[in-house]
Image 1 (cartoon, rainbow, N blue to C red):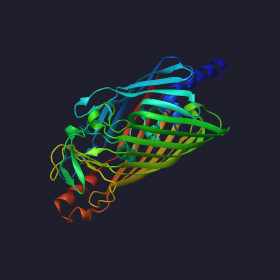
Image 2: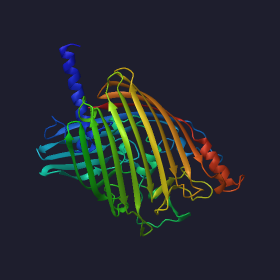
Image 3: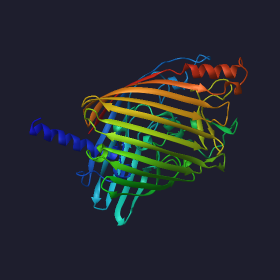
Image 4: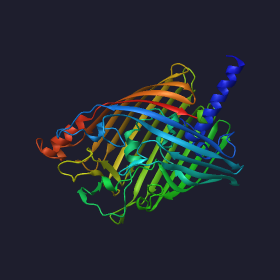
Length: 451
């Protein structure tokens, strides 16, 4: 490559590294990436990215003739195939002085963060300030923050493999939609409560208003230790009726640095553990919500033939386990327009895991695969469901700033105890089994363009 070509490649890598420094990538120091402005941003720097997306699902129907929600494209759940701008963010960030960094981002895509019962509305998704250097060993970050937690929740979308579809355990256990807490909700039996669609808000993108103590250390040149401990308000940002009680979240990680790469593109092996606890209210009573997990990530080589990545994470939760209605308008035994059944209480549990890997077969072409598993409400036999997804994908990286991705998912849900629903020929059991059998596969084609 010519010297001029080398300079262009370095500039592209630095530009992408600057954006992904705040957006994320595999196997990285999330506390630094999400808090410290990239070199060269100055006092104010504008960046962003956009993701046009085409999703198609098999439109199988259940016994009642309805297409299950699992076969409809969110967030509107009206069609089985759809072309949309799934995500689009505009970012302003920078360093005001050697001790103060800030980051503000708006979300303009049509997704579960911007789309609620009232339709589409762009929203502020990030807004925080990081104070460094005032207290040794502690940096303080305040504002709207990603709660320390699972890797897939802290990972940045522009660098995420299978970006169009989260592992089910993340989408259901860690990213629930929120709802008005001041209302009184009817019982659904087995300790659950029916939440009408009109009471539902959007999800919160794993972010909460709060304050976080964090820092990172290099006791050895190749070893990095990092931590984050956050105290925040549980609920949807800027919607007081969904936010009640505190959330405490913490994560600790250790990374072995292989050398090569920098920022979000660095080569390392990272192990981590995390924990979250909150006290959400439902029908005037507070109960304890707990989530915890651990995992490991590996990244060696980005846009390098033979470059590879690996990610494994397992997690579990208790309290406030959400079971979305299988239909947009729930038929039969449930009132119409019921969106979700929520099961508070520490006796209600769920757990799951995912394993993903990627390989650059050429400088531009990356192959990916992922398996994810989620077991929801094993303590309630009639409500227990096991979700199993196998995904494969191919990405073409034009540059560190842009790529196009094709993913395909084989999806399955099992009813672990059909006998608990009713006799073999009962309407409730036949409907539940036909709904599970109707879950179809999914294809996603999308592009990511960053600037």
